[in-house]
Image (tube, rainbow, N blue to C red; front, side, top):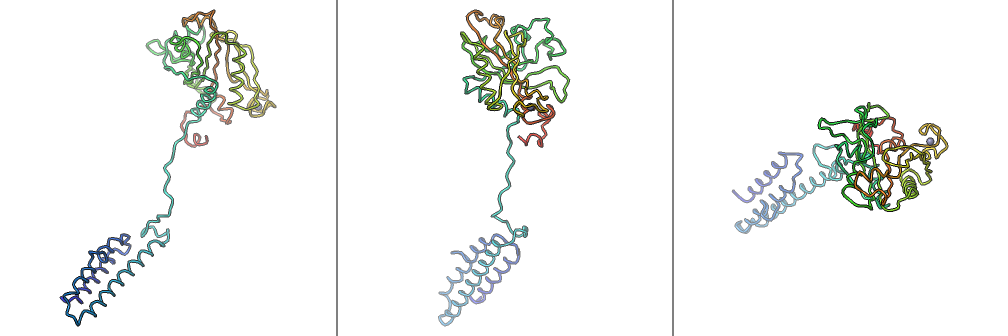
Length: 339
Ligand SMILES: [Zn+2]
């Protein structure tokens, strides 16, 4: 076969390969196969030496033409691929399109609220203490001066396990654990889940979250308790929030107070959320009862301390105008993504 014929064979092979797959994207392989340093066209050039001298000029020209022809076809095809419209998805990949983002999760609104509180109390020098959600009756009740005939110990209010343990009704058992294992000074908050045997409704749930705080040292005063809570409420709710301490009763603190804050939605003017009183009931607190210190083995006349407890769900309900506490736990992404 003369070299002229071979030029035709190579050309035909090239067009066959190109037309086999008109939408061919992998032009580079074809370019290497035909125009590469060891490609088919280069192979033809090598054979020029064996051609009769009078034919060399013509065959050289034919080879150069072949090389130019294939080069320009490949260049055109490549340019066409790059400029192909994005609607023509079958024949091209548009490398300029932005990628598909995978969805990222976020913190649950309750976790966010807890983290905010932990952060604020952390700046005030409170560490974080945690404990089990299944507790002994002694830690949940007796050690906290809640006597055996107290109505809170009734089956109606508390979940009891078959083994006689309770699902903690507050995070106070963690305070007991802390005092049993450490000497004063103690300055900690106890965030976590608590359980009450209540019918689940829009306003109450059988499980909710609390943050309790405990500060025990020599000569801790009620004024320090007030100062700490005022600072916390201004950071957490609103910078100009006012606090109102009302006398109350808890078995584990004496004296005890319930604390209202001026409504952070209407700034005390009165609105639907604060039932037009201008105040929101937000937390309970007091000075630790000496009976609690005795129960954990402290010398009750040498230490003093304060404790407080604040719910997580209720302030969040108020702040975001959420109508139903159950929405926190239904895991409806349409709800959760709003925060
Ligand atoms: Zn209000």
